Amino acid sequence: MIRKGFYKPFLIFRLFFTPFSIIMSEIKYYSEEGLQNLKDELHHLIAVERPAASAAIAEARDKGDLSENAEYDAAKEAQGLLEARISKLQDLVANARLLDESKIDTSKVLLLSKITIRNIKNNATQVYTIVPESEANLKQAKISITSPFAQAFLGKHAGDKVDVVVPAGTMQFEILTIER
Image (tube, rainbow, N blue to C red; front, side, top):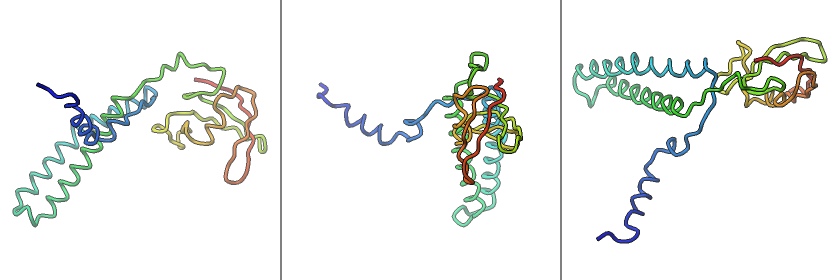
């Protein structure tokens, strides 16, 4: 005979001992290139780095007494960090959503928009692509959607003038084109 409320302690136990990252997994959006980069990194870590870490532990173990073996401790710590990175990447890939660029509206600035802007003060033009945070790379002119600079342009149309607050004050830009 099972008492009423018998499973409640087990549910509480599971809630407290479930890793926080599993409870708080969130969906993130990626371009095809960004998602492929994540998958490639994950494959490299599993296929190349994990066996190398195991080999380093085995080599350190062969050197003698484990209680005084700093090389063994370092190899075990490196393996732990590697496993944490693999776990994080597996979670990211599992919760990743691929953005279909063909269905994105090109009349206004959104995620994956390639915008050409002109600084009104000095007439300098710049081209930026607004990407997910994990794909941001200023050298490639890819700015994060979470950055204040990109946030100022979101939802705006070609021809709009946009005021962007920067540490030196406020800069005014004009959106010349929006592409995909």
